[in-house]
Image (cartoon, rainbow, N blue to C red):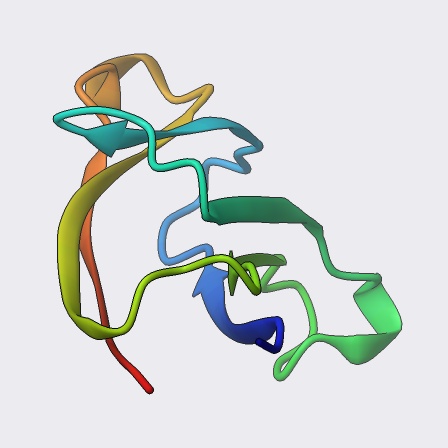
Amino acid sequence: GETVERTMILRQVGEQAFEITHIEAQPQEVPFLEFEYGPIPADEWQAPDVPEHFITARLLPDAPSGEFGMMIRIFTDIERLDFGLPAVVTAEIL
């Protein structure tokens, strides 16, 4: 009956700056899971000159109880990563 969310930080590791363009759930979107993402302000970065982005996964109040897990792909504007970065979302919904 509550909205629960967790946020992860995606840090730039190379010289090439990037932007998150979209996130896809696989194999399909889930109506009770939503994502928010974007750049973190430079004055909040862990290290100077190392850009960071946040990704927040949010389970909505109508999520069914039980174990939940799925793959997602995080897409950026980096051409050589046009397949997206794989990640896993897991939760135990009470």
